[in-house]
Length: 317
Image (cartoon, rainbow, N blue to C red; front, side, top):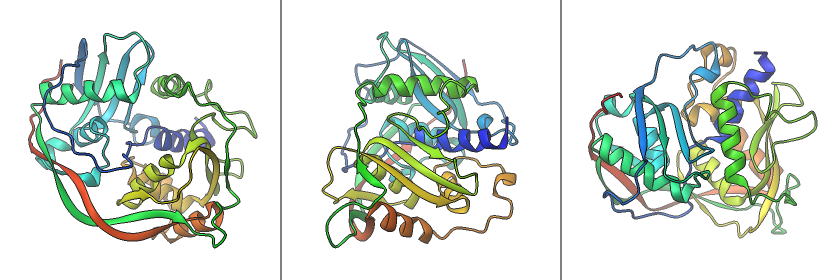
């Protein structure tokens, strides 16, 4: 795999299969529900080859035919995915157990591609039944960010524009991309030169690996909220007032982008970070303001946190 393709693969998975973040605090009772996978196989993840980013990237995504596949997923990340939470909104649990990585293959009764509404209850039941998860929500006061418009004229920046893309088949598109990443063959989803992935956030590396941008096609502002929450490690409220779908192009240096990828929980090979100084996050804030016309204002608010009371290792099958 060429360096260009490796960089694309690493960044594509980081933004396509990020752990989702809700746009409002949720209070969800942790209790078994009626929805369960028909069959589910759980195995410990084998050691990955750190020289190949695709072998160590944690992914969790639906696939065609009512199937779900997760690879290299730590238990805490499975909990985060199932309850639609970033890692900073999960507390408790045995640290060693929560960091054990699993591969999961499961099949639902439905033959269609599972959307988030259908998938999350299935994952929740899987964790409750197979991992003996017991947990509860409680509000905790913490620092947050408000995403607001930064320009005095109240308009978005030059790199944030209304989109004309039709994203009504987003679940199917994401399932196809998940299958391509899982197989290691990205040829079917690589965009042509000068083009971008439809209805997705993907890296724009036309300027070379030293001059990379995150390109969003047909994205709601809540997608930016999700990414910024993961990147900043704080809950982000949308106070921008922007509605509809947008295209954006957020230009970042490689140092900043690799730092963001690490914050998503991606195990970046040391070689990929060679000679790159640590990023303090200021470059992201500057790019957000100058390019997208947005900024993050500090605030404090109660945020629902999922507290893991007890959990057990699943028996591989």
